[in-house]
Image (cartoon, rainbow, N blue to C red; front, side):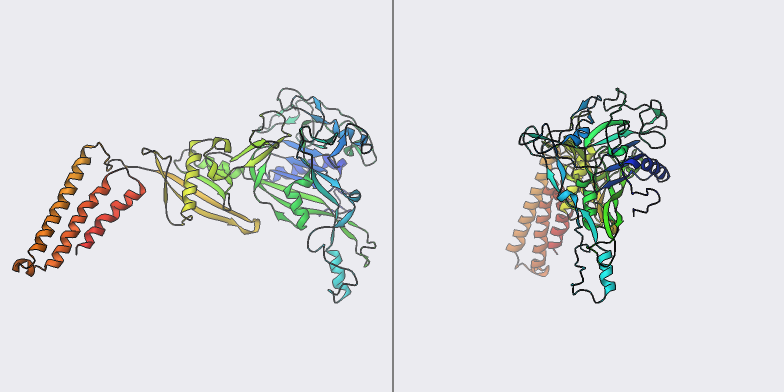
Length: 546
């Protein structure tokens, strides 16, 4: 809980504190390696985050995107020029920060003045005229639980071809992805940059992987100071620019809405296509009491959210490592429909990157990702390579999961499935278990699949030498039994037949004739239905006789 009296950041965490925060964050994550990233989003739009494993830092200046650019219409926008010209492409060349059609942004209402937050406790009437309270102490407690939020709305950029609002383009404040040094601080010093997957220092390059980063963009950025100071190190080590505002991300909005700590549902990390969950807590500061709090209780102002990402890569790595040389395949999917993929021993992520403007088109590899988003894939669709499946087993897992779902996910039964619809297809058996963590609101379905042998030795198909022979023997037995039945019925008054109880004997002979017809079930491929018939028809027809 951040306050005005915070010892670490006496004036609250603000843009000038970026490097101090990253240094502290790096030390924290070096001690807790299971964390994917720790990040802070503030209600003024500032964002700072740190990926320990990926060896990067992300930073966004405070402010609102969606500002008009390209002329004086609508007022003076010169104060935003510093942001409009701060984006770079994959080769490090400067490009304008222009919003894509349909991209979200935040617009202040009444100068982002404070209003009560949307949670239930903040919406209570704590005034002296309220009849809800029996004492001043109860009313004071009510006031203490009220949270105050900046007033703004979420909008989207117009969806015309060139991203203009009438005759005006809309610009955004970029979130920069920066190289870092051994202390976690942004850097572009050659030979001192930490690189993903190695402890050896290297150099900082743009997204093309060959152009070195050397940025000295100067301007009155918030990072420079709280009094309009100018500096040239705001974008040090900034190799990638992206339109990103924490205030339209689900982990931020959900926390802002409920005003309490929470776990997010599983979702995709855009950069890596890894699955994970986020634990979020609101951050507050305290203002002195005013007319809104006549009892003298200071306002509790919502400042933002601190969040910790837990990646599911450890689950995928565990499955891959332990089932690498095994014939068994294990996958994890969400229990709720549409059963999004969580992890698989095949190593497939079950996610893809597509264009925001046209989701049928893939995101360009190594190019501009500002028009891209990550989409999740259901385990039922993993047979499609475009859905993120990378091996043939992904398709079999999809078929096995669909078969399990059709049969109601039986707990104790093994469910068989074929790899494809051909007669010679390999077969697998599968079983599922439900895994739940109620406090994190997680409910996953784990499926375990193993190959099983398909025996063709007892398969008699058309063209086999036994096919006609079996038909002949079965028909001969059926005819002989019917003839014997006819003889018994015709001579049922004969003393010998009467003594043998002709009714019982006739029923037995009828059962024998039907038993011969059961031989026809052994003709054809070994399907599930025929295998069941082969198991049940002989004893059923035999039992009809006695």
